[in-house]
Amino acid sequence: MSIVVVASGKGGTGKTTIATNLAQIAGLLGEHVVYLDCDVEEPNGHLFLRPDMTKNIPVGIPVPKVDDEKCTYCGLCADICQYSAIVCIKDKVLTFPDLCHACGGCTRVCPTDAITEVERTLGVVEEGLSDNIKFIHGILNIGEAMSPPLIRAVRAEGDKEGLQIIDAPPGTSCPVITAINRADFVLLVTEPTPFGLNDLGLAIDTVRQLGLPHAVVVNRSDPDNKIARDFCRERGVDIIAEIPDDRRIAEAYSQGELIIGALPEYKETFIELFENIEELLSTAKVE
Ligand code: SF4
Ligand code: SF4
Image (cartoon, rainbow, N blue to C red; front, top):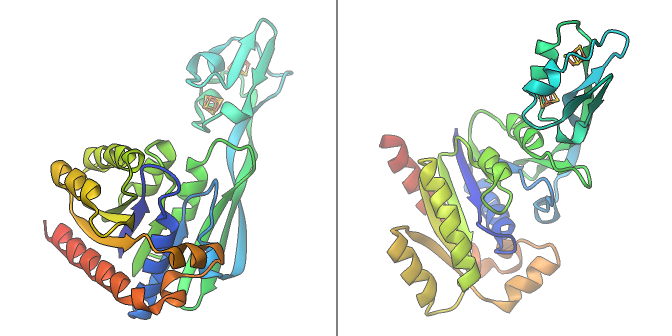
């Protein structure tokens, strides 16, 4: 099994466009592909791959519930909680489920077994099939901030063989780390603007700290593309594909169409991208 994560330092770079087209081309080339949309706050891979969904699995975390009859208000639960999700005030214990990280610490230290755990639902994982691509995504409940457990649940559904293509959340925070953890290769999508390259720099720092092989795709590239090429040369990272700033691509995107479906002349670009990734994967595995 190989895990390829498509990530970006900021939103709006075309990360999902690259991830979905890459998945489709890999499937057409005979790979067993699993597409995992871990951008759970705004999953939109399904708009392009259009899977038929067959499974819907609610995902939650265990949070504490205190039995006042058994509680002695000793405060040990509040002392151990690193997130102020349980607070003891005189003869009252308050819980704040939205802040709870489900570490189980309060339940373990309670001397009177006053705490039980109840499920708090964060969202759902849906599974389906798009042609021969297994499609899995997570949908975080509106207003929910705790996305890493849902991202872990999406990843847990991935097959243990073939090629996993993960669409990561944008940025460089905790949810991104959860999505790129244990990746064999990270494809960083950027656009050739000062903002885009600044955030690409942060993403490069993150994958380097994690020791993950990586390379860059420049989306909406101009023919010269000097700014992105200079930046990547200075940072010592390879650009392995450049997708031009083509109005027809934006039109295909707005209609929920894959680039390689709407504009077959781009098939070769994505085949080359896939082959480059395969080569880098095999080099990384040898190392
Ligand atoms: S540790 Fe248990 S007994 Fe002590 S305050 Fe918390 S819930 Fe109550
Ligand atoms: S489970 Fe952990 S994070 Fe949640 S309230 Fe208890 S100690 Fe705090």
